[in-house]
Amino acid sequence: MTRLAVVRGAGDLATAVGRRLHLCGFAVVHLEVARPTVIRRAVAFASAVFEGRIVVEDAEARLASGPEEALRFVETGNVAVLVDPEMASLSVLKPSLFVDATMLKGKVRPAVPTSLGLAPCVIGLGPGFTAGEDVHAVVETQRGHDLGRVIWKGQAAPYSGIPGEVGGAGAERVLRAPCAGSFQGLAAIGDLMRAGDPVARVGNQDVNASIAGVVRGLLHDGLEAREGQKVGDVDPRGDRRLCFTISDKANAVAGGVLEATFAHVEPWLTTEHTEPTEKDKDGEKNLEG
Image (cartoon, rainbow, N blue to C red; front, side, top):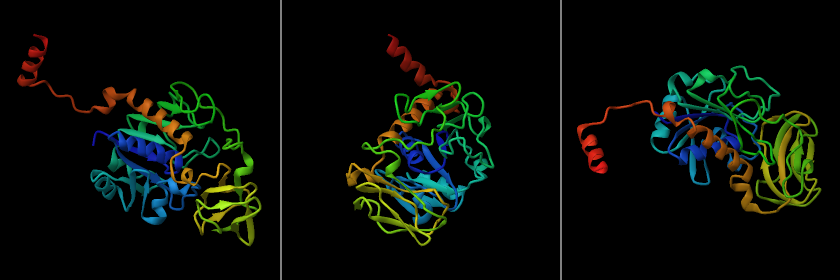
């Protein structure tokens, strides 16, 4: 396949990227960990790891057992999700495009780092990458004037640790684990909550909403949370539809990836160059004359 894209990660931003590439004619395979800690599960292909399949807007992702099955899935028009944190499948997949969308933000260095040698075109999302060194391009993920901008030299803005503002709420919209323990949702994504309502439980402690709004995201039940970890998100706008559609931020980032991708259409995307036939030459003559 000359248009096979591998996306490392399958959270909400990675999903927006994979969906956009899929709609533009790419075969897309997402690589994930065995127990993904995604929050916006309703719009994350990572949910296929737990459920076997998920439809995000107009794209269906299916969990594959290995790279060969992943290739079969994409050949039939689906997005594939593969549990492969070590990226061993790349030797079989041989992508022409690799996007690192793990959003580690430079805080953690993965066991297998992203590098220019992974594919003819390598793109990184957000901080932690340097365009021209470990990736060909970086796409800005921080909200603000430069969101979605393609960086061809240097790095994205450093991770601030401050949650972006949504509907006038910043840190107060984020639900965090009060202790270490097993996570259990007491509400569902899309539920309307009042300030003080219990949304989830970690260990034997409740996690209460700080503001009124709709539950936009929750950790998957049964995952182990560490103290202070983000386990949910309450959207003060109260619009349930927004929980099940890709966000403005994610769409802006996906647009940046698409820009960076097609800026390299020649020669990396077109791997076969054939000489024009006599019929082609005759057609060219007719157009000229």
